[in-house]
Length: 229
Ligand code: E4P
Image (cartoon, rainbow, N blue to C red):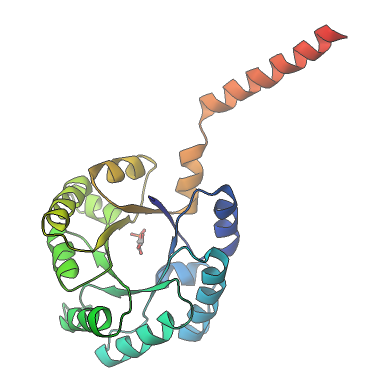
C-alpha cells in the first residue's frame, strides 16, 4: 500500500487517517523539531507514542538522535519497545562517512529482531548496501537526488531491480517529496512506498477543474429543485 505521511503533526495524521488514504507515518529529527517537539529524546519518544497509538497497526518510523554506535543500539531498543508498530530509522553512515552504522543496522535487524529503516540515502548503490545489511526499509530522498542533478526515478528503478532479482526483503520508501508529480512517478519507477508531506498530499487531491465541475453539478442540482416547485 503506497502512501505514508511524512510528518509529526498529530492533526494532519488524524485528518488523512480518517480518509483512509495513508498506510503509515515517517518522521525524522527535523520533522519533529518543526512540529514543536522539545526535550530531546524524551520529547521524541512522547510524540512517537502518541502517533504510534493513533495509527496502530500502521507502521511509524522514528529516527535515533545520535551517531554513537553503542547509543544507537540502546536508542533503537528503547524506541522499538515503545510500541509494536515502531520501526527505527538509522542513517546509512555517519556525518563523516562512518561505517559503523551498517554494523549497528545488521546487528539490530538480525540479532535483536528490530525493524530498521535505513535513511538519508541518495543512490541505488547505497540502497543495495542497506538492503544487504538486512534492513526492512530503505529510504531514498528523491527530492534531494533530483536537486543534485541526478534522476530519482532511475535510482528507484535500479534499486527495485536488484532487490527483486536477489530476493532481498527490503521495501523501498522514497521521501523528500517536492512536487505532486513525484508521487505517481516514483511509484511508477518501482518504489514500494512514497512518504508524502501533508501539503503535497492536499495538493494531490484538489484540482481547480474538479472544483469547477462540482460547482456546476451543485448549481444544476439546485435548478432542478426550483423546477419542481
Ligand atoms: C523521509 O524519510 C525523509 O526523512 C524526508 O522525506 C526527508 O525530506 P526532506 O528532504 O524534505 O528533508
